[in-house]
Image 1 (cartoon, rainbow, N blue to C red):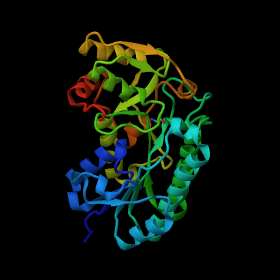
Image 2 (image 1 turned 180 degrees about the vertical axis):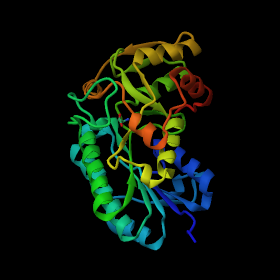
Image 3 (image 1 turned 135 degrees about the vertical axis):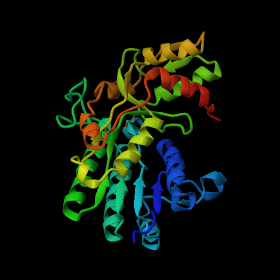
Image 4 (image 1 turned 90 degrees about the vertical axis):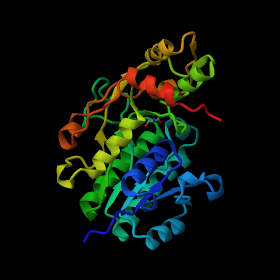
Length: 317
Ligand code: SER
């Protein structure tokens, strides 16, 4: 008889982790999903328990945790994103790569059945196809974050092929959510803009008004993650990471959509170093392989997402 699931989420207090933890607990039961993050237990609200403080770079602590628990699945979400990574390339590389390699290794050693690790549109670079960027083609990332994600994808494929580890991944676009704040990404403007709008403040955007980027509402991102993780292994033809697509918009377009709901909302554009990162990425993504293999289909368009965000957003403390 198959044992029931016992799931570990590393990076459970991050932008994706918060919502993924809640959704996994809905599906598998609260006690069967252990949330782990670097913050001390005392700082974490009771609703997020069961919770354990974990620094994923602590190899001994990580191994002890995995050795002592029979996890059937691990979601490894801890990472340094594109903009923060450019401020501290060595630390970004160390965190993003070493932690992935530890998880892959320990998952084989302790027979974890499935692993999820997120990749990103940041694996693409200036020579990648700009519109409907295909699953396969030129990547050549220019940020340390993108380089670590591109390398990580190949490590995942390698562990699948050499060790039979069922590790699955998607290339998330910019993610927009109302619960957790994003941390140090180039696409974060599309979350920050909502916070300014609901506080009645003018928003200063760090990208130019016509910079189109691939984006996705968190509800779609969580659903995509779980649909991929629940798909039969034999359906999956991609063992690097799946292209995933939902929306593509510019700062001006999202501003105009928000301004329809928040009359008088104002924006100014003051591009900084993140403009160059954004310019290196595709503007839209072709996710036809994900739809073919496991039926991926986004549900939120820009208008629906903006309305939902404004109804649910909690202002940053
Ligand atoms: N949202 C990420 C970033 O901007 C891309 O995956 O870094």
